[in-house]
Image (cartoon, rainbow, N blue to C red; front, side, top):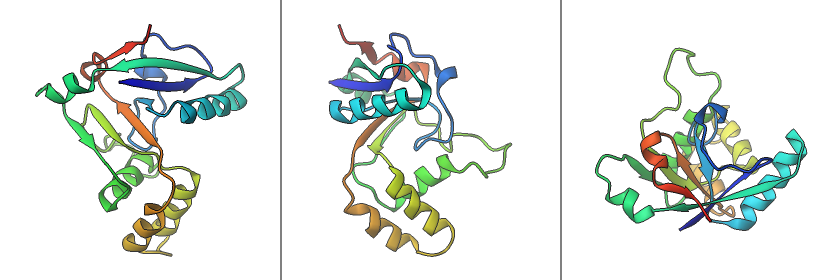
Length: 163
C-alpha cells in the first residue's frame, strides 16, 4: 500500500535521529495513507521550517509486516480510551526525564492523528476539567485522519521508496 510522508525535503532513507520526540506515538517516522493529509502537512512544515512542502511516497508491505512474528504492531482503529491515554503518555513533556520515551516498545503503531482540537481536549482532561469518558466522547465524533508510525530498523524494512 502507498503511504505518504510530509516534509520540506525529499526523503529516500529514514533517519530516526531527525525524528522529533513527544509526538502521538513517540519519536519515529510518521506517514499516512491519505495523500491530501500529507500535502497539507507538507505545506505546514514548509511554512514553519522554510523551503517547499514535499511529499515522499513509500510502499508499505503491510501484509508482510503483519505476518512477521518478530514485529510488535499496535493498531488503533478508532479514538478510544486506550488510544487517548497512549497518545497523552507519548506527548507528555513533563514525564520523569529518566523514564523511557516513547511509552511503549511497538515497532509499528497505526491509528488516528490527535490534531490541535484533540490536544485541547487532552489538556482539559489532564487539568481535571473533563473525565476520560467525556474526553473520548468529544474526540470520537471528530474527523479522524490516519498515521503510521515506524519506530525501529526492523519495522522500516517493510517501507520502500515508491518508484
